[in-house]
Amino acid sequence: MIERKISYKTNKLSQYITYIDIGACEKHYNFLPLYETSKSTYKNWYRDFQLYSIGEQILTLHYYLLEYNSDGNLPNLLKERISTNIDLLNKFNLKWFDPSTPVFKSLDLNWEDIENEVLKTKENEEGIRTEIEFNDGSRICFLDVDRIQSFYVTEKEYVELKTSINSIIEKLK
Image 1 (tube, one colour):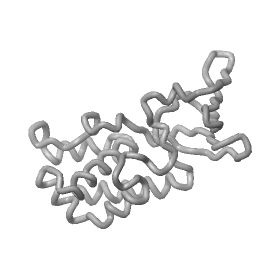
Image 2 (tube, one colour; image 1 turned 60 degrees about the vertical axis):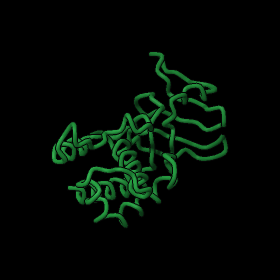
Image 3 (cartoon, one colour; image 1 turned 90 degrees about the vertical axis):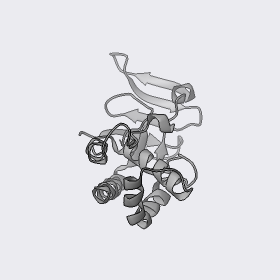
């Protein structure tokens, strides 16, 4: 998978920082790739789960941890895997999410109405946006596709995130 990059700055005076798009999906649990015993085996769910974007994976894991930590109803096999690795999962969750909400701690532009926050745009000759300015003064320069809605991490964070998520997925096996 080729990583999509953007340059982002928080205001006119700050410097652009390169971020990597890790993907995302609707934050409501109905849209997450959840393991349901009535629809699939754990082995099949696990195989498919590895193919999702990091954004979808971390949202799903965050949901499961919220459920687990609130004594929610999880399928037994998944609950067992989480129990075995709860310290690692909780550490991961605290690093990347507000513990009680689906708010991602890095650059979270995964809002349904994010386009409504765009104040100004610059476009190239083909009419593709190359830069946008949000109402709060922050800006994105698109280095390829001009899609906004997603989760992003800095290039430095990306290596750590990818290593952590791969380790967690391996432990869920």
